[in-house]
Amino acid sequence: MSRSETPPDRAGQPVRRDARRNREKLIATAQAAFATADGPVALEAIAREAGVGIGTLYRHFPTRESLVDAVYATELDSVAAIVPALLEQHPADVALRAWMGRYATFVATKRGMMETLRAGFASGRIAPPSRERVTSTIATILEQGAAAGTLRADVDPDDATTMLVSVFLAITAGAPEGQTERLLDLLTDALRPRTS
Image (tube, rainbow, N blue to C red):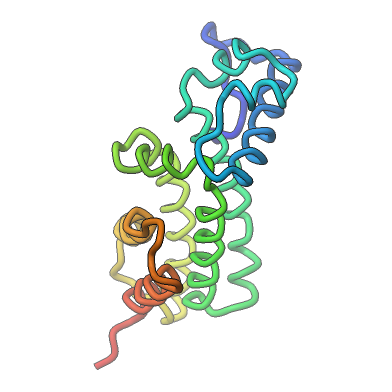
């Protein structure tokens, strides 16, 4: 079960349909709020906009981090879904760089949850599940690239993920224009086979 799916309740029973709808509505509302906000978004505002009480929000998402993590996971699903098309259209190294660019756009549009994401990544409270998804996606691209000779065969996908996440942790407000793109180009070059 992915983290964007509804988990069973505490007794292990499937969650009722209306509870599942409320959870999905909260995630969709939070996605829209986080994407357009210039800073942190009040959880009360998300609950109100979703048409549910704050207690319902906290029942599904006991902390701000749990809501941010669910939104992040849901959107990461859509970012991961583009990989097959990228690999069909491009050599794996080009597909990897294109995917990292799409991932960068995804991260950049999360203004309203960036502070929570950064703290979650740095503390490890958000990173493990999301990181697994990123690592799995990168592993798929690396495997195809290694088979075709466009990417190194000796790279641990988790190391590539660490470097990718580090790029976004290192970029701060007011960073020079184009710095993210340059860092992603350097990362892609590091993953290409060495030439003698």
